[in-house]
Length: 373
Image 1 (cartoon, one colour):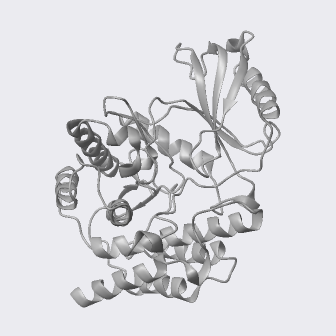
Image 2 (cartoon, helix red, strand yellow):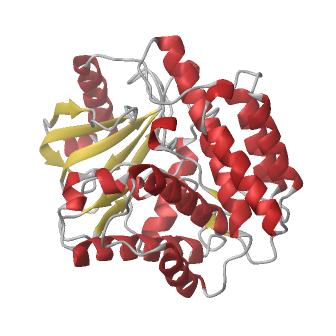
């Protein structure tokens, strides 16, 4: 696949977009909310600044500065910087539901296990404050390298040893997520469980394909989804907590290469950990093919799988199928986003419908998978 054939490398789960609201209104609404939520600690503190990070379509995160700093977590440590995840209006949402209560429970479970995630401050489901529900978190340190790490100037300029540390740290974190005792963390019955033959996950994504395409998916995309259903493997191993959007682009990185935070848990579910690994490997392989090179210090595919298996404590299973399923999900997300962009007159790198070059790429992956079976 030539780079010129591809208008979109991957469709990320954090692309949603919200209806534009002027910053002054957001500051006023959030300031009123803070004064009532932590009145004893407010002490005249005000929201001074709100920024939207420049990260493509990821405009649903508001980075907020409060002065003076206030104790929003109850641990006696005043906080000056918060991150507020704002729910998009349904008409411009990338997913049918944005359940902040669920995301907060997952993040709190991860935090309790020692994994680096932002501290949840509160979930506010009353749209009266900002015009929509929102999730308030402490702002974690670090920078994001985006969906194509090899094109990030900061990452490319690091010593090879630091690049390797970043990649190994990401793989280790993925293994730690999948080893978390999600039942002991009281996530049982809260998150979608894929089921032994992944029937619940496949049903959810099959419905998503239809929803994202406004009831009219490209026939090839619908066929790809049906192939995933027909060829789905049985899950023989104990299921894990799955991230749902396991990308390096969802990791905040510190200057020394350590992980500052793991972000974006809206697609968390219970299922085979290979769903996360397949998502990462499939999209990484695609971006590497298009960009033409990998980050110099990153582990190769075989090394990545080997290190991950060491953390998981077993060999991965059915990885080829999981990579194809990941690509189908990615195209479905792109379908939704491309349609939203077209309807709103917004520039977007992906294309909707039968003209998406990713559909032919997936067809070739399926043909190779079946030939090797």
